[in-house]
Length: 227
Image (tube, rainbow, N blue to C red; front, top):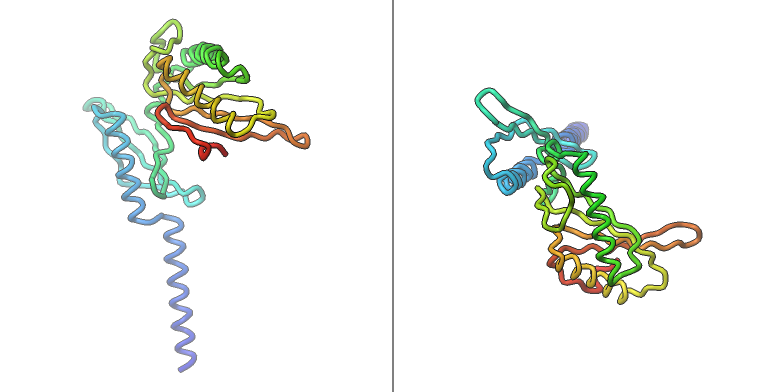
């Protein structure tokens, strides 16, 4: 009798291990469905006029917690293009890649416009925050739509702005005031950005460290936003 109970326990444990291994390798069905819904919403928002189909086959990356979906873009009766999209397997099921956008980028034109945008923004911000010592942007255009970058240039997506500032003896209150001033300058210049990330650089024991502050155009910054 005891031997039968032992065999039953072992069988249950083996089944549990197999189920756990299956979920680890293929992902949770409910999460997979929600990730697909998130991707559909993303495509509808960014490409409302596109005729597409999301393939049923989905690959789960258990090491990084993502689902890989393949989206078939139907351009004509005989022409179809497949794009891969990685979507988080966890709430809020963020879409990590937009390969449609990336495949259309004119890299040469974007590089030129980035250089001009960085110079413009650096000079703009240094008017009120002279401590800003570097600016990096990710302006991306699909073709050479303009001879030069200006704040009025329309791009497929708003840009990310990354700033570097020597922290020195700045207090959190001073950092907050700087970020508010830079946010106001960027907004008043009508610069089309979705996020600005400020890296406050310091050196301790020969090691370089950064304290980061991020803000969107409409965000009301407080001390809680400072790391």
